Length: 400
Image (tube, rainbow, N blue to C red; front, side):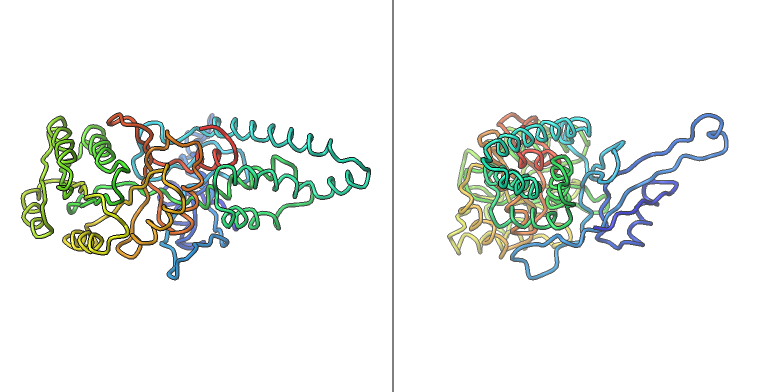
């Protein structure tokens, strides 16, 4: 990993310097504002210092094409961070954890690993075994971290890959704190940039929500519509093609009335053009689709026709998945939908599971950006932007 600092008058200028030198794959690790103190502030202007990195080890599985150019959201690596970089997109309340909170949880993880390693060392019976354990202290610590990741249902393939990428860079007897921090940073890197819904001021954006039945698409749409309308003051409209379930139309109708936003019900792809004309004064249209069986070719074709009613430059697609679904089934779903369209990943029902390994697994499997997570039925409260730092902490054994 190449790590460099860049200083300029503004954040945008500093980021531009980083991209010019390191390329478009450069990632921002930390942003620090430097304000002159004392008498110097009379003639020195404030500056912005960013730390950027270029990680050449990120591998996207089962993707023949190159991954999209992204600027992942990760933490500061070589110094004590004064602030943690946040994505440029708007984030819902509570989505980003403070640096101090993250460090406190890492300290707790460190104490846990030290305790486990001490217990493990105490079980060594002979002097020869103790010497072997001391010489392999990195291996012992990495084994405990591996076990934690597997317990959180991280796929063995990806657990081994992440550990393998830091193992050869560690100094002998690097210490629990250094190893744990390296793993934490690598996981945040792997989780990548979070994609959120951004409004294009020049044209209407149409956002499709796709996925199996029963995962919570309609409720998720209502939550996002509420945030966009109430917090960001955007002109939002709803459209639903989920006419198979009367309850889904009634549910969206209720939310549309509460929010005082238009709702169009679509019975076929042919009706989308007319509905788009009637919504031409909106900033963004959120489109609910019928829950489709990923095994049905006919239903997948219907969905493809619906997606094709909007030009790619005005279209975003979010695949909504339940965190309670079996990982084997999630893999099948993501692969089949990948044949239809590019998408970002939304995870629902995180409050109903104690393991979130599938969040990392599916991102690494598909290369699709992570986006939102929901954790209850309350609208609009029980939703947030996925926080890579929080996810990495949980994968290593920390609490939410």
